[in-house]
Image (tube, rainbow, N blue to C red; front, side, top):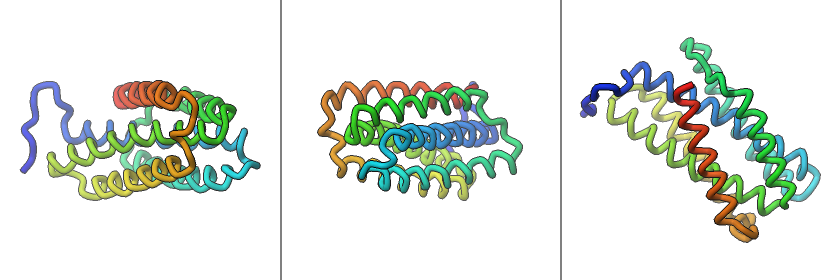
Length: 182
């Protein structure tokens, strides 16, 4: 059963375009966060873990870039900002140490997990885009795995963990909101 559209709700086509736009922007930002972390921690023991996570995010970004191009969807104009901000966030948290870098991963991934769950539900409720729905589910599972790995690497042991992750989550939610629209 599909949900009833209300006045002001995006059409299914608009919803899909927004989803592709914001998901691509998020993956661009994720790759850049790992780039920043690797610039600081790349030769440390955490480097291999960060490279593996970056590789998954890069594959997500590339897959979404292909979908955007194939469908003629306009990417967000904010991508250059997210690229710079992602690198800065990654480098700054890595400078605080490997556990703080992992705390940043937890914060971002928790927001992205929620975002992908909501997106998957909306696609399912609308009865549209089964392939995109499956892609979102697959990407969400990868993000959960990254979060779990970051937790296993001591993310919660970061001094000021709650404050740090809360700030990162707020920024991530704002980036999602803006990228959906701009």
